[in-house]
Image 1 (cartoon, rainbow, N blue to C red):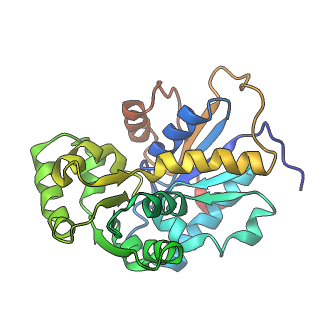
Image 2 (spheres, one colour):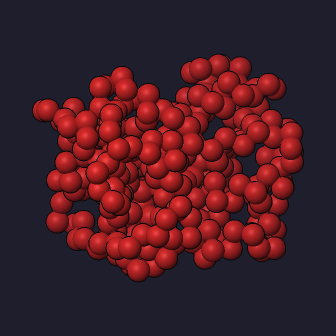
Length: 274
């Protein structure tokens, strides 16, 4: 299958959190076009079974292939944990990148005391995938996971700098502070939006790893390795397209609050057709 290096990159997430990944791709790969899909009708993925997440992801990959994307970024930690091996057949040679490995690689390099924390959805933490990645790189690393399910609704409510959010963070993170971690992976794409609050609770001694940023850097390497890196700036005035499975207007409002430009349109599609 011939892949056009000037085709867009497909980015998908269970909802709006993956916009933090899209934002880092826009900042670090400004010549690339993006097709973003948020599965807002079926969010969250973190509480769903692996079988269900694989089925949803296959539908989304089929949609993105119709948009003729040249690479796919799974901007959802839960999907990254569950689908990477299962969807290879559907890809037909299109490179795919999840958000877990890039963050794990940086955490393994950064930790000094070999005690790494991971926060994420219930599904992600119970998968144990960060522990697997980190201990494959360094068997001496101890990994401590903590599910923080209230963080996502707080972010989507826009309570990024609110006393309620700080209190919730303090209660969730107390357990990890007691473990004396020196590195913390923000294992959900919503969580970089709470970075300031998490930093306030954890203190300066704990290095926060933002997988969204690390994924954008790894994507650039992957595109260069596969000879798919765009060599020219997109000719379109607005080279980004946004699709959702529900609540297009609500998605657009949230996108406009965190992206460096105004999203003019967001299109709702029936993802169950794919």
